[in-house]
Length: 224
Ligand code: CA
Image 1 (cartoon, rainbow, N blue to C red):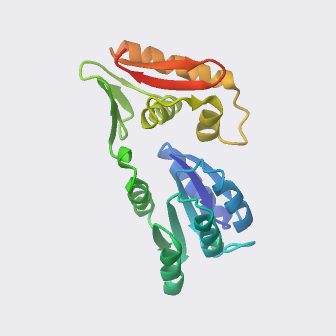
Image 2 (image 1 turned 135 degrees about the vertical axis):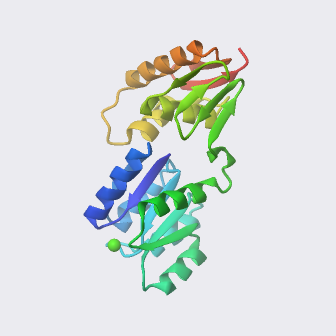
């Protein structure tokens, strides 16, 4: 998943970034409420971790503005332990859940899983299309007969394709989601990784095919 981290305490932000990356998420970090809203409104995030006490605009104001503009990205609020009112206000404003500082990393990951599961059933433990299953815990792609393990980028590509199967995903979308806005990734990087994934699909006897749509992007087709 692609997650926006909004936290002005650099140390905590860095810890969150490392933790989420270790769990194969793609992250962007911003440190004030103004940037938070700009980034969130791009709509590319699967979840937002949003601190309440922020410079520029506080987390509640950011959240209210997002929801008023129709942005429904799941939001996990980070609040100080004493601020019960913040929590109530946050939930009333449209936060999906909250976590009080200090929190354990296990709890943060569990709550992220929980808020992204709602309304998005595909975010269970496995994604399936045709004869092929992608296991979200082991990052293995299998057909029952054969199984391969995907690298981080291959996994992220396959996840995007399965979640949006039969839709054309523009190349820019892969860059935004997997490499991030600031990345130097060239489009031919994606082509390289797509070819790796295609080889693995072939190797396990998958009936899925990644079709290239010239100058646009890729789509996953079943039963070919
Ligand atoms: Ca803060």
